[in-house]
Length: 219
Image (cartoon, rainbow, N blue to C red; front, side, top):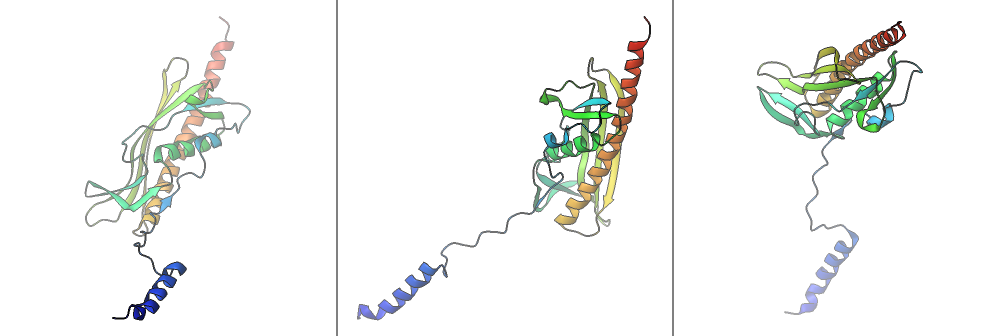
């Protein structure tokens, strides 16, 4: 057989490959969706909003690693799953403390909110744990986003407990899907964090005033 009969076919294949019209590799899967809890890093929210008040030292929340990592957690009938491969744009632990720092600096009675490893000398320290940050769905019921946290305000000088606060927020999902799950979780977290910030601002201001009164009192 005359090999010249195959030249046109070879030439066409080479032309198609060179032009990028033919790919020998499979198409890559679509990227997993990413959702943001906070659009800034914790350090960006630490500036003073008030000239007077308490400096509050912060730490990232403690809690289950699965809930405070990158994944959106969806619990079905007490079994943990993850939402369609979707993820937060960064660890939830980091983004939640950024939300809290921003909420605190907007409260009267708070001069600044600073991470405890940033070198600031706080008047009080705020420790907190996140017990639930997930969508929960039981058979026959609609899915609901839950944010549950406990906060502890401590005297920075001696770690004495000043006050405690527990919040629990539930946000029903309007529909199924990763975008709606992320929205409901973000709204629940923001609402709970706003409660914590309001409590911490009031308690810190009262603590500072009480401490100042004791210091001014005659010996």
